[in-house]
Structures are given as C-alpha cells and as structure tokens.
Length: 227
Image: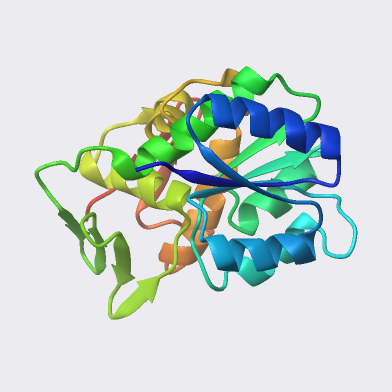
C-alpha cells in the first residue's frame, strides 16, 4: 500500500523539492504551508508520516505538535534552520521522531523518511509481550503499561524501549540504539538518543532521576535492568 507523507513548510520551493523526491520514491504526498492548514490536512488525510517545519506563520510546528500529538501518534520529522540544542530538546519532548537541520540534502531526508516508516513494518520477534516487574510492553498492540496505567510513547520511544527490554543486561551504545529506531546510522545525531532516553524515563520510571529500569553505562550507552 502506498504511504502518504504530509510535507509542511512555508517555503514553497522547499515543499516542491521534497514533494518531487518523495513522489519519485513512490510516496503519495500532501502539502500544507502553515500550521493551521497542516492541522486540517492531517486530520483529513491521516498521513503515515509528517515532515514538519518549526518556524511557520499562523501556527508554528511546536503548537501543531501539541495539538496533533493529543490525537495521533503519527511519526514526525522536524525541519529547522536553527541548530541550538534547546530546539532539539523541545521538539523531541513534544514527540518528534527525528530532526533534520536546514540546509539538508534531499537524499538524506529520504533515507530518514524510509527508516522511520520501516519501524512499523519490521518483523515482530517471537516474544510479543516483554515484562519486567510492573512494566510491560506489548509489541502486537504497540502498548506499554506501568502497573495498571497505560503510557503514551512516541514511535521512537516505543522502539527504543523494545530494543532495551528485548535484551536485559546488554549494554547498547547510542549508535546501536539509533540503528534500532532509525535503521540507518547518522553519527551526528546519536546524541538525540540521550533526549529520547530522558523522555522515556520521565514516562516509565517511578523516579526518573534515579532510574529503576534504564541504566546509564557511562562512556558507553544504556542497558535495561530487569529486577
């Protein structure tokens, strides 16, 4: 089935360029040029992935994410001309799955699009439900529970937790984890794993500053601790 990608940016030339590459790669493309229009198009078209600019008129990308994330867990790749770390933190905390800084090469963006979409099509492992004390992850239903409480994770957070839980005690480097959630290696973006881990701990750990499940192995990466 053809995947639909929503491209949102107030730069018409950039939207046209990205649309051309996506169409040539076999995707169906819908577009919007500001956040308000994007919200309407996304609700109508129910895209499989959204490529979203941050700085836009009428409604910026952050506000779009706050509204749309309350309704859907569609993967989102953010585009921005800014490179400050704070920008990445805010975007990832709002549920972005990846981050591309302008200017970018269209082939890099296409690789990221395909990698994000591949996550949902990966073969399930034999163990469909992973458990550790009061934490459980159901791969089939793509749900996570802490006790009786369901936890709302982004697609990247879900894949990250699934990778860690599937091999308790194994130390994963940041690049290992990046492979699991993106399927390709972009070394310049491996530090975004730290931001995903921070967000994940805030959602599943009883005391995020003193993690019970996801342990930092300094200088190496992370591992899941099964009690």
